[in-house]
Image (cartoon, rainbow, N blue to C red):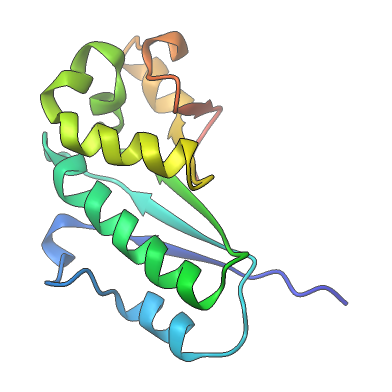
Length: 139
């Protein structure tokens, strides 16, 4: 029987801890039961979410990959922070976008935004950066 485990971590700006630790990631790393994947979920209103979230996700991903090299990582964004990933807004957070581009292109991290949420604000899926997968709806 194949075990399938996916951990959803809510990343909230108020919960950011120094050195990019997260109790759920720590439990995974300390355990010996390799999960198939981890989903980092963001639901924020902060206009600079990716400035703190991208480096944190990058660091947590490195910690997880050090223990579990085959683990799959996905990022799901379905708050207002997803609109920071629109092409015309990407210049506002260049360093964060660069980190996200590396995560997607070099590290095979999947970056998803909610298409339903986008439609509520009249945002066309083609408006997003090419590293973003616009899914029908978020979790």
